[in-house]
Image (cartoon, rainbow, N blue to C red; front, side, top):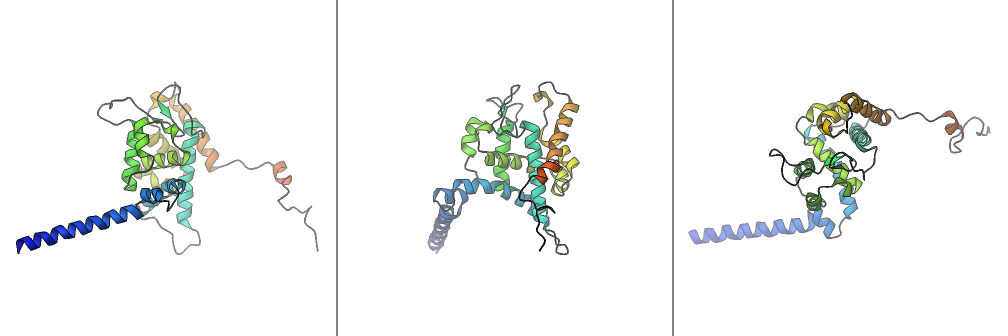
Length: 249
């Protein structure tokens, strides 16, 4: 009787393993890329959206049925503003940027760090990829290569965006700022950038804290409050109808 039970249990585990292997083969995101079900670019471009959606779900933020505003889209757009403000602050929007005063590289200036751990901590680049994969609950296509070179500038822009979001959204203390960021508050976004992402003044090549703050405020303001087009640029736009080019019937 015991042998029959053991055989049944072994058979059940084997069947479960086969089902899991089949699932991973056809439905795991990375294998869907390998199998050609989706392109690598489609998968990569979806990483940032998935990271944000997971965070919105965790915070139980959703549309208010009593309003006509699509609040979920607004939340995603506001997180995108935060991401762009950080990108402009760190590298003037240049994904291939390399710091002249440190090992920081890429649009968000992640430190490669030394070959050994510093005071028992991972280099910032390794922390970022670990947080990103932990938040997603799976490995990302660029993860293995990135762990080898740790140079963010070598990643595609969409991968760098995902790396930044994964690192920020999973960072200790980020929850204190998420409500304000999702609701589009620029001051909260700037404080979150300075407190969570731009944490090492030693990498600012002599810039004072006030200069760093002023730079961030200029960058974020250009995203949250883009300059209005000049009157000339509007009147010279042939696609815009004015009183002068509207025929009265």
